[in-house]
Length: 173
Image (cartoon, rainbow, N blue to C red; front, side):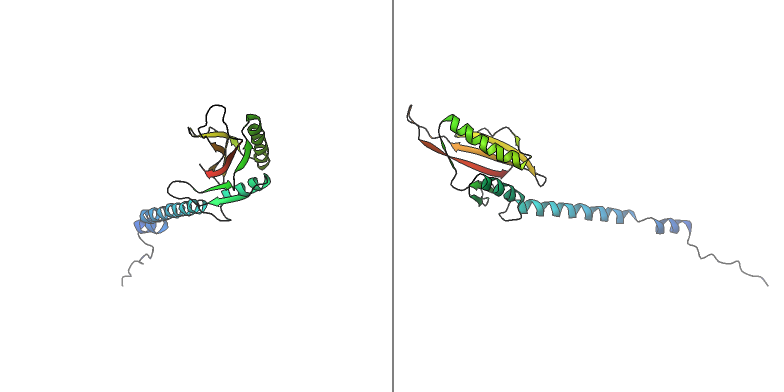
């Protein structure tokens, strides 16, 4: 009587290797899923920071600064020509003397310094506005800017206005 050799129940070596390691397709699909999730999260975050609302990190910073200056903050939703922004409602009325403007810049700078993180930055090149202050800060991982700017109105020599309304504006860079 011959006895049959016992059959091994272990899978072949090729099958063992495949069962222990994830397949390449599985790894690729998981990686694509992670990348897609990160992209969706970034889009949701950026969309939320461009909309008015209490959760907007720029709003929180701008409201605190404008209120510290004694102003009333106002959110303005973005449109086709302007980005989402927060302004000091009614502007800041400053006498046209350079000393008065410089004194206001010092006052605003003191509040920005108290909040921390605001750095002097190169102002945009505009020909129809006087820019007295331009600072930038990273808020929630995104660059933001604050600008103190007044429109320049053409006036005849010696005929300057008695005051100028300056806009203190916060926007994303």
